[in-house]
Image 1 (cartoon, rainbow, N blue to C red):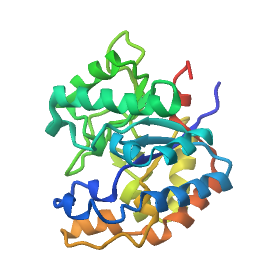
Image 2: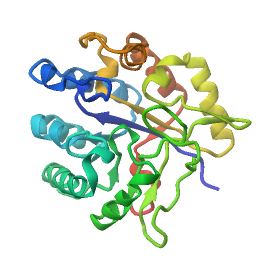
Image 3: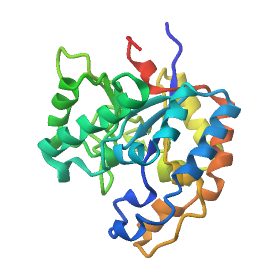
Length: 274
């Protein structure tokens, strides 16, 4: 029986790509904190001898090709996070495929091979966007990690499975949802974003331990700006403030703690032909 594996990923996008920030052009000419965030992330990963998956938008690659190349050369996986971090329901099929092709081209220019993984911006594959899987399969992707199996206001669906599955029967494309901690009929997200920042490190460690005991792997996910307390504080809703700013100051220490207790891998190891 194979030992359960946990995975770690980072979504490389601009901090103002958040759905809670409407006036994105206002911040586009300011510091995007991508470099600062990546430097801190790589430092953490190196200190624990850990390789990760970096889901990168095309716009990030266009702006920082040398940085993305360095990440790849250090042994990390470079995967697609679309071209411009727009939710799929806003993009539509044609624009999604167009952007995905460009994203794929940009990644191949750096890594010399086609990306195998994809993550939809803001977990934006819902039941209405399952058409995206046909496009991903047609373009040669091996896995997607785009489903959030918990009902949230902006995304997610508690009817989604929590374990990897084939979204297209007979294909080699695997969807790898981000599994929550389950107790009774309750699903608790905890492994990334604001959820990771909300929970104490001891409880996160407990969740991972219990899931691993049930032979269920965990997928951690973060953004570079989540390690930069100095990002601008803007006027937004209360929930927007919590999602964007809460717990950032402690995120570095918390991730170090988790990586010191559990082993994590890049997501490419979940499919058989990596």
